[in-house]
Length: 487
Image 1 (cartoon, rainbow, N blue to C red):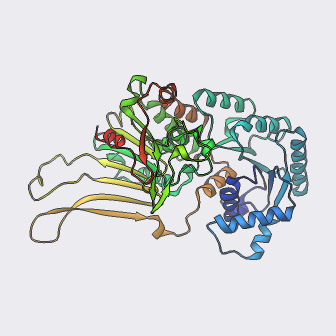
Image 2 (cartoon, rainbow, N blue to C red):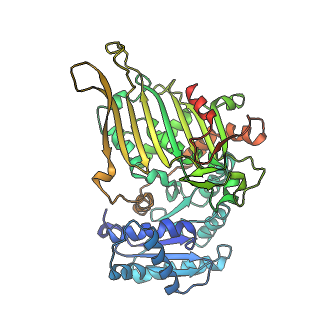
Image 3 (cartoon, rainbow, N blue to C red):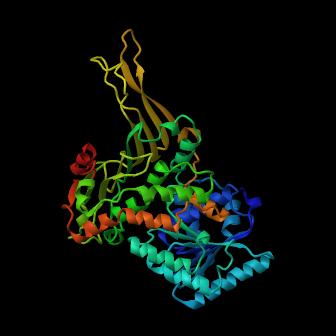
């Protein structure tokens, strides 16, 4: 709904001078403002540790918007109207006095409005500070209205199942579940959302969406970047935690879920949890058969030499942290029994690509199985980034007098429909402002996703799993991943 239908809202950004706020949050808020999606009455209270004047902080935000925002054409008047809504507050999240001052600021806003505004708290802070901030918000009485007060928490949500359960328990003592928005930006991507429309808005695909017709599913998220300046953080995380447990598991849920009774958050999230509960857990003794892990070594991308992972700043030179993961899962329910789901993700890969490939089974009849024709299986490819399209491949007759077949492709391209596709954070922030939790993770979903990879974590961290493979930076990944696919 557009801004004239929204209640006044106070947006509080913890970590407002951090990298996420700089690159994603403030550009997203500004774009929503320009397109009329923010409330008519809103304030953005920006909390940070550095000493800055209001003018200095607003100039900092403007500089970042000019660098990172998808919308670059805006007037000085538009910027002035937006910047007047931004207030910087020097803030120490370890001090009770800071939260008392924040309460006074929010109360003053409500008095000036003559109405209790909605409150959206964005915790762009390190996971170790979530407990401190959430408890302090509660103690200061800042989140007492269940219907109006919401909190967005960034990943990683825990580092294993036990820590995720503990964090959920902690938050449940402070907030109601409907107030907590656990964000995964992949769920805000246009073509990830399109999976639901594609599956449940058409009659021609859903009858084929099962083990009678689908041979396999591949989910790939490949990056050309390395760990950049995040070596210290990444070395304590790795690709399994950083990508598989959240991003790829969420895509898996969208592909494999049953049809919800209605397009409602509780229904959709229930169906996602059903998928995760049905994913077959890999036994410890089978980890080597179903998974591959690897680190990138020195290589070239676009003609430029790239260092190996162990030479990256902040990385332990003896690190056993994986930068690449490939694995095979099965979903033990009636729809998907026997269909392998392959996931792979890696850094410093040959190309940047996030995609889903649905491979259909071979044609059962033998009509065209002869020396003239080579039949290729039908494939449905959903590209998430950098392309955003849906591609369906099928066999057709070649023009000419002979009955020879060739593969053809039908393509739906998002960029041809609109060049101004909203960023993922715009979608998710707007949903949080509207109180729509459909694209956010619920506590049981988070815990089940961790449980799926729990045995893998145990095996890899104990040192009892097969050795670490390697792959050159700029390559397609380790050979062992190809072997996994062939098996």
